[in-house]
Image (cartoon, rainbow, N blue to C red; front, side):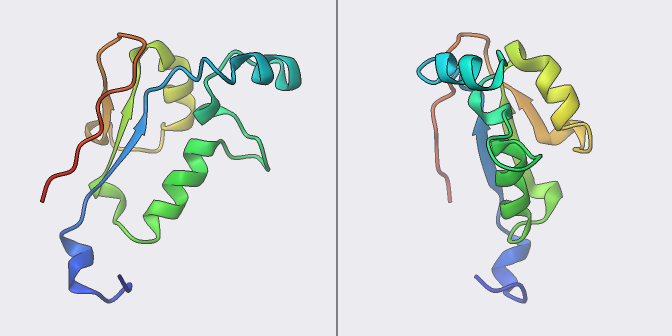
Length: 106
């Protein structure tokens, strides 16, 4: 897709960021001293993995059509890292400790 592409006006993106990152939690704790799931950690630079992902997606999809699915367990990280997002684009999943199922629709 090119920036001038008419498809750009119809596409939506769903970023799944509700996982708990249990497998990498010990690494994050020992190397970074954080208890945050990996999507909220800045492994390189000053932006988290989630912020890097959103920045890349915004090059192709308008910000108002990017939905981010997060866990209510991560409310602190969400408030800090997604404060510049419109509230209706941030969707809280069920608090089950499991990420929501991924889906695709045309």
